[in-house]
Length: 525
Ligand code: MSP
Image (cartoon, protein in one colour):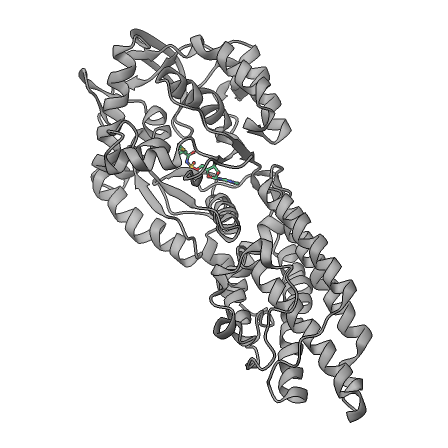
């Protein structure tokens, strides 16, 4: 489904709790969002990509207490020293970064809440029940697991706490029928299929109203009409997707225009742990306010360590830099999306990552680039020869682009990357079969040799553009070494749909012998 004129492709990641520094689970979601938005930009679409931090609530407050600083100091420090630099290091090209402690967020949250109160969607009540501070979630008794006589959160394996408070409630139960209808009418609105089924059966089981305020601590947004209470952290956090783009602003203001250009979000990317918040509570909040609901919530699986969700609280968190220091940023961006079908859980293993790095990145892709540039330098004085064609390569490329585009737009990153890497293998096969180094032995074959080198260079031109959303730094190096930046413009301007146009690298472009794209791993590190 395409967007109407003037509507950007709007993608969000969850906003992450700043109780700790990012680990590779957080990076998994954000990299996926970055790859998808870069792909859509290269399709020539307007894109808006939002990420940010979730800074209120007990979990963050308690961590700040433990560290003997105020919650505000804690979040300011961690956002600036850990979160923002982490995304920069991973080459994440987000358009905006929202923090829930910013006035642009808190003010719009209060206005939205007041609106729901005025329209009769909020009432006073009493909440009594289990709560997991790590999930920041009111749990249902059936959600819990029992060990040694204690009730534990199944995600964090930690004891739950009992909450007993007078709170404000949102009439969530009133939206069960409209939500069921929405998901039945729009099969794409919640994906993958397993997530959609989970949401449908959860809704069919009936849903209670939701406590949306807390009264026993003060680290949060004050409820506008009852400032002894703060807004429940999830109600506050979910609204970030809309406050960041001007929720509730005058349609003629800058915020109002931004909202019209972006809302509804095209994709909310989330881990499966927070699916219900996004596929039940969030659209119900929007329905209550008379706003359109997101087009798609996509729940991906977990990165597992020892068969369990990797997390800092279980001391299994791995920092992205632990991996990028060894393999480089682009291999990190590539590996998780290539190795794990998006939507299923996957275990991280150094062995698997090393094996793929060597066979797919260093051998299949990196060597192809260095062989080609070295041969152009050696046999053609570093100049791209006359435009040539190869039917088989051309038609393989056409099939690749269509398959990759379809897969990437459907968030099947593995399928998309596989299709592109299959083409890379095909080009390697072409070079092996044509044996240009043998052709070079007899000057009578110079014409044939140049054809082979041109076809290989053109294939690499295509590979650079197709892999650019996944590995932007590497593809930029390749692009420059093909001399393409001087003749075809910057790599980010290249359109996916134009990749198939054969013969774009002009004869005479100067090729620079490529730096090694994926250096041999130093196993001593
Ligand atoms: N603050 C909430 C989200 C609010 S969104 C309105 C939150 N934050 S979180 O810091 O716990 O991050 C949750 C997200 O991080 C998950 O939904 C998922 O996208 C990502 N992951 C955290 N651990 C993960 C794994 N072990 N594996 C894969 N993704 C993981 O929940």
